[in-house]
Image (cartoon, rainbow, N blue to C red):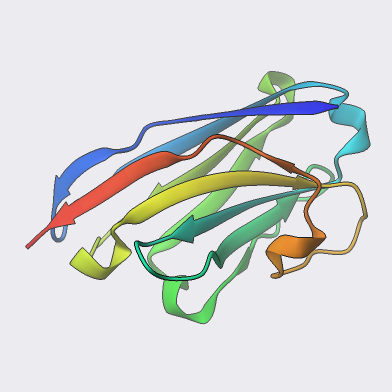
Length: 124
């Protein structure tokens, strides 16, 4: 099992920035891909960004390219999501997820482990 704990959410004004953190524990060696998803009220969970523990290249949803940056610190078993130029439509619960398989995926169904989520609210 892999346990994921997110932190860093909060209330921010439009145009502001936040950095989310996700710390993994347990059988972290069984997770190859780490990702961030988000879910707004009444909407489906959507992919935001993903990264492998083994390389630095992030993979992003088109709407977040250039505004969000995913990174990882292997020594701390922590993945980050730096969010800039935030918009009210970025308001959602942000979830960290881990996938056993090596291939990155944008489908939440392909992820084996999930955190409890952290709320991000962007005011206009």
